[in-house]
Image 1 (cartoon, rainbow, N blue to C red):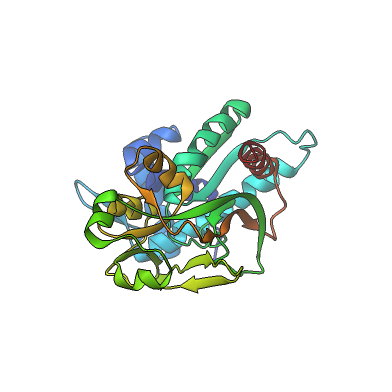
Image 2: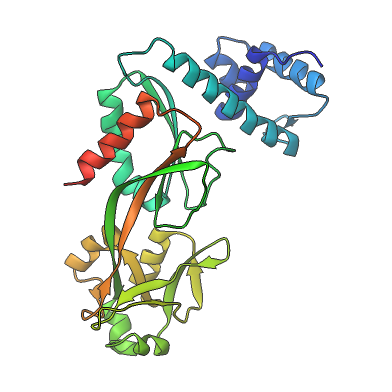
Length: 298
């Protein structure tokens, strides 16, 4: 088989990222027709259809989705190779692809991304905000920020960049209607709001007065895969929630949420920066990790 044309692959990625042939072509200085012909040639070379096209819409086929992820990884590796050769100054440049938890990403990481780009104007950032556990390597990310110790992959390197506390809380209205739990056992008589991702429920971890840590899976009729959605459900009085303090402090200070079980400590949850171990730590990744550590230690 003859070699793939990198220009045609780049056109395909630009069209997918921008959502249209016109916008994708414009990014590369191509007409809509030229962009369309490049992708047609690419499809002919591969022997598969990459895009579903209608007069109004464009979408990836299953083959197109797989090929797109491979293209992203190839271009990321090429960019890293180009960046590393002769770059002794350590100045961040290129494209940083980062995966972030939705709530923490928007509340705490997004301001850092703005500062990062002010410090290093030669870096472009593609950020994905999702609580889904992405495959960093297969999906072509340079870096991911994750909360907790819910991963075990020898192909990844992890660095703790911060820690946060969790709090058990509910609204005054809920507590007035259902009573205030005083012990862990009391939670059995309450509706609890639980974080769940890929059918895996996140347990609550509390430290008893004896010093013993207890992991509990409380009763729950409502399970959500978004931290902010859990907070909003708690604010609606739907139950008791176990949430990170960065999501609750504002509402606790305003009296809209009440901290519960004061005789129990909650765990200090780590926030990790994770990147592929086979990839050298480029300046764009290293400097963003260092920025998180420096700003969050305060």
